[in-house]
Amino acid sequence: MKLVKAIVRPNKVDEVRDALEKLNVGGMTVTEVRGHGRQKGHTAIYRGREYDVTLLPKICIDVVVTNNVVEEVIQGIIHAARTGEIGDGRVFVLPVEGSYNIRTGEQDAS
Image (cartoon, rainbow, N blue to C red; front, side, top):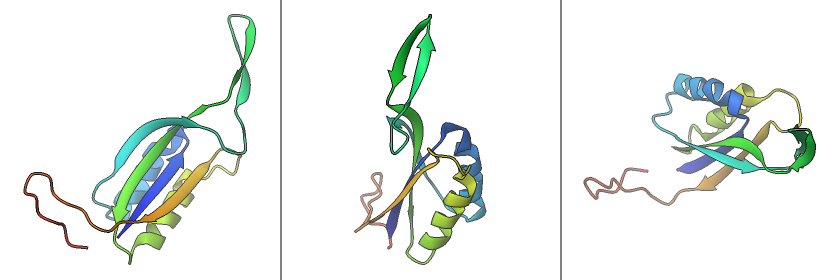
């Protein structure tokens, strides 16, 4: 199993969710996060004063999938989240050694 962690623009969450539903991904965790990559933020004006915004709002979507669909999931996320501009986000893939159902205590099948 793999944990696919996608950091995307907030306005792309629904499109990514729809793409994952089409791939029959059963569940996901969505978290509001802040950060920056190459874009390093931007300058904004609030009440006539200029200030730097270095940590931009993003959304982190976590899904755990089996090894045989991980590439489809990655491509689906990339296709749904892409605008072609700096700040579109990143996709990370990490190994998952196992998972457990909290209610029953049973280990889920890999």
